[in-house]
Image (cartoon, rainbow, N blue to C red; front, side, top):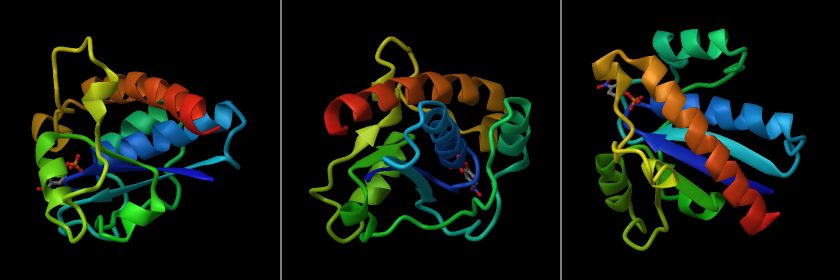
Length: 154
Ligand code: 4NP
């Protein structure tokens, strides 16, 4: 099983959206038994909570399930469990690097999947309120990531 972890700050807006979207695309490609997805946050405020209402609303619009998803903290154990760790912004990456063993961890940054986009970080809709913009970026980036995982690991 190849495993992908998305990391953001609160684990209620961006990374759970990416988790749900990528899992949906994996299902469409009939690869659910070969690629698993999870998400986590670097901040502990929302541990155990379901995704943010804005994330839930846009996933509902697209018919994408977020069933049983709850926020959790990223931890050092994730470095062994996941082949791909994808951070939503630079500060998420810096926070992951501060974990024990994080200095040498191999991290990806979501917007590096979309090199033609001017934005170099996934904007935080918790503050911008623009969940549609984030969905568009996440859907496009997950298409690229899925092709990359298939090419590199399957
Ligand atoms: P996320 O957004 O990192 O995309 O889940 C945030 C959610 C909550 C907070 C910050 C960002 N917060 O400060 O509570």
